[in-house]
Length: 295
Image (tube, rainbow, N blue to C red):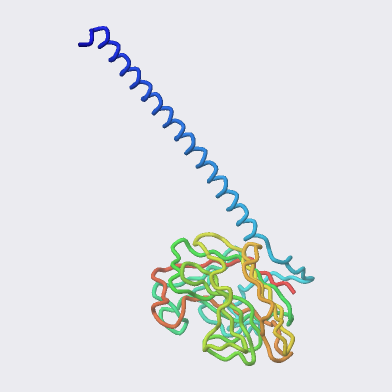
C-alpha cells in the first residue's frame, strides 16, 4: 500500500501535469488566434491590392479624348413656344406638358403608368433640334440624374445625336441615323442605334451593360461620333461616363451616302418599349443640364 506521502506526491504530479496541459492549450489557442489574424490581414491586403489594380484598369481611358476646335452650350428652352413661334430649329415636338426648365436645367416628368408617347398617360418628351453646323465628327455631353424613386423597369430612352430623317419608332434607316441612349433593367446603359445596316425592326444595342446607373446620382455622359467614309466600316462611336471611357467602336457604319452628316440632336425620353410591361410604376422624373456640343 502506498504511503500518504506517496499519495500526496502522485496528486501533486497530476495537478502539475494538468496545469502544464492547460497552459499549453492556452498557448496553442493564442498562437492559432494570432495566426488567424495574420492570415486575415494578409488576405485583406491582397484583396485591396487587386481592387486597386482593377479600379485603375477600369478607369484608364483606352485613348485620349479628341480635342475639338469649336463648342457651344445648347439651350432648349425655346422648345416650349417653338410651335407657336414657328421656330424652324425644332421639329417633331411632343410632351411639352412634361418639361420644366429650371435654373438652366430640364426636369422631365413621367406619370405613373406611362410608357410610349402614343399611349395615355403620356410621359416624357421629345423633339428634334437642328444644329447650326452640319459636321461629320462631333461630341455631345450633358449631365443626367434619375429621381430618387426612379424604377428602371425594362428600359427607356435618352437623348443623343441624329442625322437626316433621324429614324426611330421602327422606321428604316436608309436616309438617316440616330444614336440615342437607353437605360435598361437595373440601370444598365445601352447605346440604341438606328443605322442603315440594322437587321432588326427597331434599334440595335451597342455596349449594353458596360456601365450601370444608380438613382439620385448625377452623371456626365458623353458621346463622340465620327461618320464613316462611304463604303468603309470605319465610323467611330465612343461613350464616356464622368470622363471615363465605357465603350468604343471604330467600325461603325452610319451612312451609305456623303449627304448624310451629324446635323441634329434627338431629344427623346420616355419609358418603353411598346407595351405596358415597360411602364413606370410611380410618378417620377429625370434631370438634365449643361448640354454642350463640340465639333
